[in-house]
Image 1 (cartoon, rainbow, N blue to C red):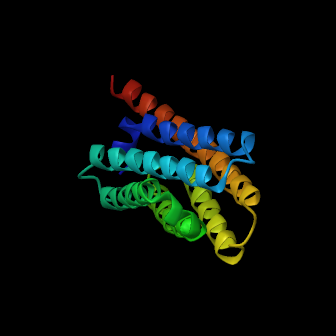
Image 2: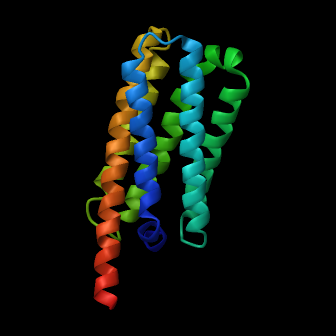
Image 3: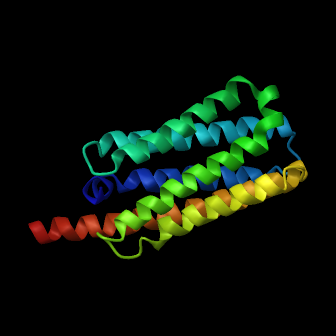
Length: 184
C-alpha cells in the first residue's frame, strides 16, 4: 500500500485542495440556498470519489487498494445521485452526508492502522477518519439544524480534512524523495 501511495502522494494533496476549496465556498457563501449546497456538496463528493478511485487504480495490486476503490466508488455514486436529483436529495442530504462521513471515516482509520506498520505520523489519516466519523454522528443526531449550521459544519470538516490530507501527502512526498535519494 505504501509504495503506491508514495508514488502518487500528489493525489492526496489534490484531495486536500478540493476539500479546502469546498470549505472556502461553504464559509464565504453561508446564505446559499440549500439546493446550491446540495449541488456544491455533490460536486465535492464526486471529485473526492474520483480522486480516491484514481488513487486505487494507480495502486492496484497493493494490499488494500480495494478498500480505497470502494471508498471512491461510494463517493462517485453519492455525488452522482446528488447532482442528478438535487430536489430529492435536499431532503436526504443530511443522511447522505452522515453515512458518507461514517463510512469514509472507518475506511480512513482502517488505512491508517495498516500504514502505521510502514510509516510514522500516520495519525493524520487516522485523525481525518475520526473527524469524518464525528461529523457523521453529529449530523445523524442533529438532522434538523439550519442550513447555515450544516454548511459551516461541513465546511469546517472539509477544511480540517483537507489540511490533514495535504499534510499526509507532503509527508509521503518527503519519504518518497528520501527513498529515491537512498536508491541512487
